[in-house]
Image (cartoon, rainbow, N blue to C red; front, top):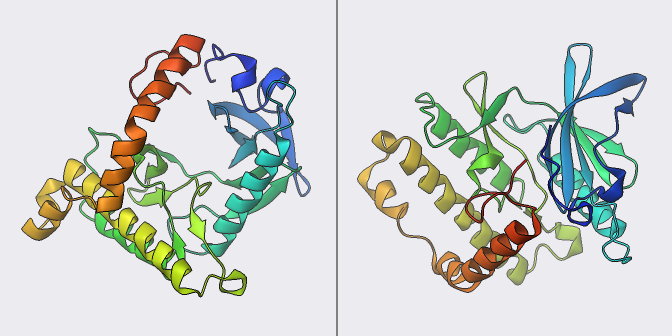
Length: 257
């Protein structure tokens, strides 16, 4: 279970507490097994029906100082659900199973664990992750959140899997996505995906990278350098504030849960 030291107003479900004990998918009743994470924007947990396991991601429901925020949970869950459906059938993306209420979605559970610094995945892991990213890009999507190693799962099958499409980018053509500006933004974000892929590849399996790719993994595009310069101090400040509030155990690294 997640640690519950965070003030309730900092947690997506607020005073409601943890995720629901059961959820209904079709004619199946799934029971809560464990909570992976519970932060400001979402709570994520594992549910099981017999031997079938799924993941529930419940978006923000709780108000903040009496300001309603359930609309944020609704928008983010619907956006992420659409992204899962856009990249459905791509090997390495867990199938989307539907919505629960107004602010939650469900997808298949992938047995495995987030990629760690000490992991030594097999020779095919990163080539397959590169192919997975290529297939996602071919659907007109930029993953955007590949900087976080935690979003890359090393499956028990030894293969890569990507989860968490909450901030992924997809601008449909029928909504202006075929304009020059939209294509430029997509190209920039997809190039960022490629840089972060090389960075993880170099840190985990540097023996596989040719000299040119190895050098590229140390050369972030200028917009990533700009983003780090502008937002790194804000991130450090936010972590210190959350630590002071009790939402984090340490100002370094990622928040607990």
